[in-house]
Length: 466
Ligand code: GLU
Ligand code: MG
Image (cartoon, rainbow, N blue to C red; front, side, top):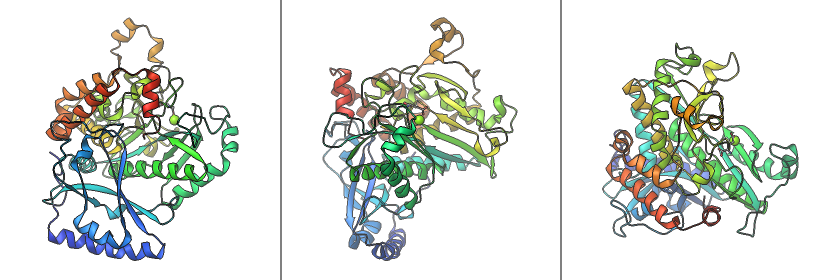
């Protein structure tokens, strides 16, 4: 299923990549770059890295960097599960940096970064490469004449360094200017670093939770949006270190209060024009946008295995915490799992988009991109129709009313989400037998790892992992 359109690494392609690296290396040298960090994100949502000194970049571009396929089986605590298609100590993969995204890391002088695609030693894409899957799904959409633009919001929590406990690095109120004053130099440095890296920041603000902040960025093509999410997070982490701060992207840093969401926005265009507005559907959605959104909504319980990938995710995903714990949609409804953002009157032709709110920052953004696009595509193919929108907090309705209006609660545990994903023929086919099985195996292994833990223990296990 995967890699319908991705180039096989034949000798011509290797030569092209080596030449690209050669010319990039000259620019990197002029910026005193010493090493290039090449990242991929594992199924537990952790960005893993191999790096090469600059002198080896050309070789890495042509021949890749060796990495064990066992990384597919890594759990949140770095233990390695034994799955149906992952976890064996045998075999090797090649990480190929995508140099079109090569970026100087502004908060790590001497370092550049590039995201990796993972190939087999035979030069085929690895069937469990999440980044390639995201690209494949974007291509499938394109083959229907549709371009998706996506963006990940990043929420995070800053604590004081030097402790595994969480001591918020600021004490001002939620959304309070006090927090920006307390963290003025740090916040400035985050904005400077992201701008230097070419990340277009739309907004930066203190969030609701203790020590919580948020950055939202401009929409891009789906794979770039996932890459940006990795870059933004690692940049924030690096800036924090230089200010004596510790950064957490865990869904839940404390058992109490709101968690860190990883909301994802998506909009579609056909022939250069948005299909998110100007249509005959509800709130001006076109049929195509309605069906895409309906497809995502219908598969959200299964998509949670991707978007809410860890036991702590389900401590965050609770009603009345703006996490979108119910399968419903609504215009500007922050308690709906899918929020339609129409923008200010007059801006809908470029601003309208759909936001999936239930996902969190532990998710592998490439898998999120792939899952959302696969579900939306299925919605278009099936001609799916949206249910009635919801314009209240679903938690304020009694259970009978919710049942009558067809508003179901999302899965409340990782194990339920894994079961739903496994039972979804569309998503498992899109992800391919091996990756779909590995996602289920990793989730079930984490369930086994955390089954006897209290919420406090789960939060402690997860707090500094993402
Ligand atoms: N922190 C909330 C979450 O867990 C989201 C707050 C907001 O709507 O931005 O997703
Ligand atoms: Mg937010």
